[in-house]
Structure formats: structure tokens, C-alpha cells
Length: 341
Ligand code: FAD
Image 1 (spheres, rainbow, N blue to C red):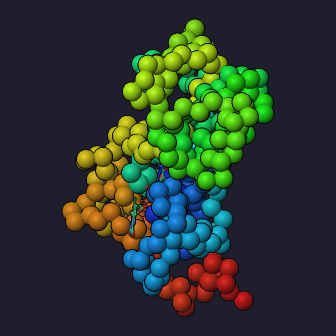
Image 2 (image 1 turned 135 degrees about the vertical axis):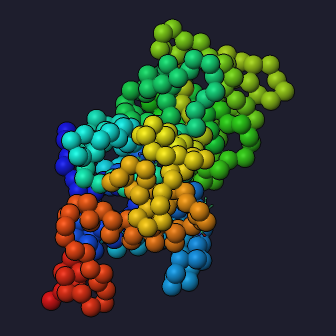
């Protein structure tokens, strides 16, 4: 699928969301994508309930509240969201940027805004040799199709909400269910922990605490067994059809490193007039960029988004004079914001 767009924003954290707004004020409609299934970046992924005190004129808000309000602020401009999609490739072709995603979408964009923060959030994986070859077949870090696990021997690793929610979800349909957790305290909701312990007492699940999956055996991409080692004990081997891990997400710069951008210590070098990278038409804002004096704060990304939007306008509508207008008094901005009579 090919999508034409004036502005493509890579990353729906606070910087990317505010970029939608700043572009919208200048009459530019944006497409925005994120590898995560929901917008918010670090704010919602790492500290949704923690208070933030240094957003100008907002005395206090949580990470989630900030993102909810940025989403509302961007609403009048109807951005097209593409969530759960990682941008894998960006190349310049015939004056446009051809941007490819993990879901086989192709964007033809006049300008690109990299708002990728500390990188794309990826599930933490097993560090067992050769196990990557089984991924998506019998080793899983997310559940796409729950029905394939019915009647199967499943080993789930992790002690957070995702691990326990899926363990509880599969309890009635799995042939065998085993939960392996590296500690004996859980991050998951106490009610889920209690429900899992009840399953164990009823003989519907096995739980290994202070334990890890330490080895596996497979035939091709099909898992056959998993070795589990409880701290201080001899390993046990369980027959298994599927092994799942929910160890949380960790950011990785990932494909952004391969787009030919000037990168310095995992950040994209930009100027401080336009926040443009070494490739004209590709801007970088927020935590992902680097310039003298850069501070990785949410308000830095907001300022950068405003200046990058003006620079992009000159590319998208060359030759057109762009005047600075105030949202307080500009009729054209009121119209774009949907607040005019
Ligand atoms: P991010 O929030 O990192 O968002 C980037 C998004 O880009 C991510 O969602 C990622 O999945 C996506 N992405 C990356 N690569 C790709 C790709 N190839 N394809 C698709 N999507 C991609 N700052 C403050 O100003 N005040 C605070 O009080 C504060 N408290 C903090 C507390 C904690 C615990 C942490 C960890 C950070 C805190 N920060 C605070 C920092 C603040 O969260 C960051 O500065 C801010 O999130 C940066 O926003 P961003 O949009 O640039 O990047």
C-alpha cells in the first residue's frame, strides 16, 4: 500500500504528537507512526502514573495525562495514525522520501520528522543461542493469534501483568501451562497472582519461582522442550510446544541508524535553526536529536517541533511566504483549529 503525505512523523511520543499540532497550525496534515500499539513514547511506556512538574503552565500532570492532552490538542488536524508499525527504511527517490514499514506500508513523503526518542521499544528477548530462529513459530514475545495455543503445552516466562494475564487466559485451553518467574514477588496485579496460585492448587498450572528458562531443544523451528532452572537446584526439562516471554520492553535505536543520517552517540545531529539533519527534508526532534547544549526534556522537543514545522512549510510549499501568526488572533489558525464562528 502506498500512502502519499506531506509530512511523515516517525514516533508518537510527546515530541511527535506536538509536531502534528505545529504542522497543523501551518496547514500541513501529517501521518504519524509508532512501533508501539499506542501513542505516548516514554511517558506512557515508562511512567504513565508518575507526576511531571516541568511542563510550562501545567503545575502537575502524569505521563498518561500529558499524552491524553497532546492527543486532544492534535485532534483538529486529523492526523493519520499508523500504530504497531516500525519504520524500517527511508530512502530518497525522485525528490520524495520513500519510507517503508514493518507492515509493508510505503509512504511517499515530502518531509520526514524523526521523533524516535531513545529508539523503538522492542520486547526484551531470551538470550539463548539460536532461539531467534524459532521466533513467531514456537517462541513468542507478543500474542497475535491466541487460538493457536489451544491444546498446546505452553511455558510462559515473566512476572508482570502481561505474563500473568496470558497465563490466566490460556489456563482453560492449554494442554499444559507452566509459569516461570525469576523472583518470588510479582509486578502483576495481586488479584492475578492469587488467581494463578489458585490454578496451581487446582492442578491446572505449574509455577517455578526464582527460576529461569536456561536451555531449549527444537526440531527446526518447532520447540520440543524447555530446561528450567530454579536457583540453587538441578535443572528440569519440560516438554513444550510454545515458549513465551513477557520481560517488558527496551528501546533500541534500531533501523534509524541505517538511514544515512549523521549520528553521534545514538542521536541525530541537527542544526538549531530548523532541527534538520544532514539530509535536507529530514528533521529530528525530541530525545533523538543532538546539538550543542541539548537537554533531553519534553519542553525541548516542543520548541524543536515548532521551528521544524516552519522549515518544512518552506519545502512543502516553496516560494510561499510564511508569516508568524498568533493562535490568539489569527482567523486562519482559528479555522484550522476549528474554533472560528
Ligand atoms: P519518546 O518519548 O522516546 O518517543 C519516541 C517514540 O518513537 C517511541 O514511542 C518509539 O516507539 C517510537 N519509535 C522509535 N523508533 C521508531 C521506528 N523506527 N519506527 C516507529 N516508531 C519508532 N522529561 C521532562 O521534561 N520532565 C520529566 O519530569 C521527565 N520525567 C521522566 C521520567 C522518566 C522515568 C523517564 C524515563 C523520562 C522522563 N523524562 C522527563 C524524559 C521524557 O520522557 C523524554 O524527554 C520524552 O519522552 C522524549 O519524547 P520523544 O517524543 O522525543 O521520545
